[in-house]
Length: 483
Image (cartoon, rainbow, N blue to C red; front, side, top):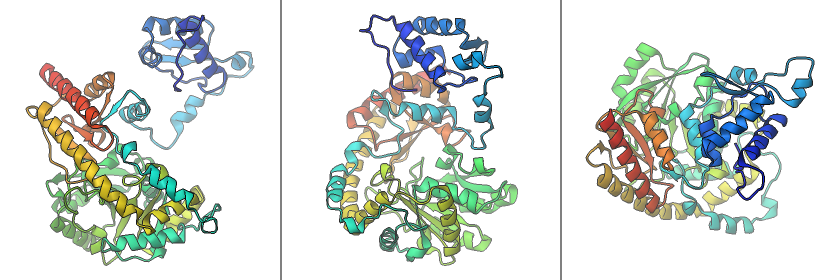
């Protein structure tokens, strides 16, 4: 849906404006035959009108033969002008949509994605830096200093811009990861790396072991490739390696995915001892590991232990890094480190799918790493994130201290809040949405979770953190009392 709104200053009645808007969506093919349109309540909320106004528009379109309502099935598009005159039945795009091999997002994730763009929403679940914390001015100055001969506007090498891969290799040395540029693949964010791995290295019916809960459950990148996820329980030190062998025997397991530093969604930091156990287990059982280090540089008091990759002498660990959480999600730049045969394979697939990440973004990322911008920016961001984290913790204690518990995150973006009692998380999500507060229910990361929410302190302002946390606490308290 667009941001269109009916005009209250127009001489045309509101229901007629809405009728015309929907009719144009149908006649232009945006809402094809078979499309289930949003509910009347949803449309009323979006257009900020009474439900009766939407009902009048829907009834008129139904009388024209464009829409049809069915009990329990919602209202669907059944005709358009050209299909009324057609001699053959109209093309049913909804059948194609349902037949696509990639799984749709869960309804909650779809609702989150749709509502995050609203200007009136307090975003307590957003996993990105606030616009105030993005380095827009530094970027502007950097682009003004572009040396034209150094900038390529054509396609880059399959593995990515060599200057950027060299800069990434130097950056990784600070983490005790020694790797040559030939073992680095530049990707359009860490998510693309996971997609490439899912179709380039694994076969259908593979089992991916990961933390429980895990960010990976909020995606369908592996599931859509015919693979299954199995969650391994965590404790205060991270994933429990002692359970991995048992889970492999019971469920199988071709690969292990982990976020050891400032885990998403719990914020837990895997201990150094535990990291050594995971690396040794990987070696012993020949179990490949994907280490997602998206948040590793966002420590607030002290650095986390060295990455798993720094302890990997056999090439068992595929390491993911990204600028999306630290510099700019809009650059769409990340990197994957692994054995050269793996990188060659995935680079070939990447060239088949998008012919390489943006050359302009790769140039900017190379400059950012090689000219010292990155370290300077991180030093400032850590200070600002700590202020927001401390404020969020203060508001949580003030409003939810008697109904929930949480760990103090040492970095990253997230506070995993677990209520003392179960509550209807879907209802909590929807009721907060009515109050213009957006949270991420724990069920997004663990389908069995009915007690937790993931709060992000990286995006909302201090005042919005207070307002949103207060609303979340009061609503959760009411729902738990009712239950």
